[in-house]
Length: 101
Image 1 (cartoon, rainbow, N blue to C red):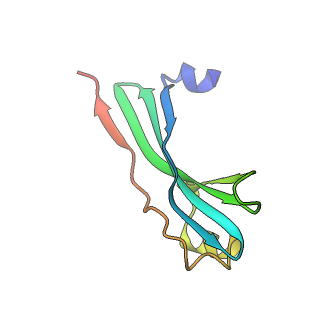
Image 2: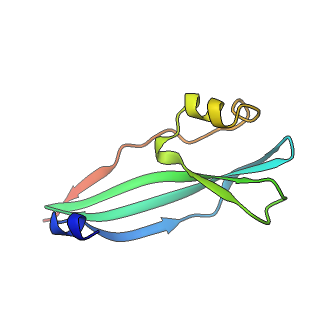
């Protein structure tokens, strides 16, 4: 974090929204959890939308989360072959940059 801050970057906020697209497949519960990251950067602000994929095998008592920013169809098929064709995951959105006036 010190190196990142030394380069002029700083986390402004990281928010987690309510789960979307909750599905049960073969006894496992899957939920798409949208996230929003805002960073102060040299010359402006970077905003990045992504998601976490939540997985529960016990009806939602305990959850494991996978960062969706690097998930693609091939990785989902490898990690979750029984559910890959049933899950509708958000498309990657490029981060936006807003210059500081």
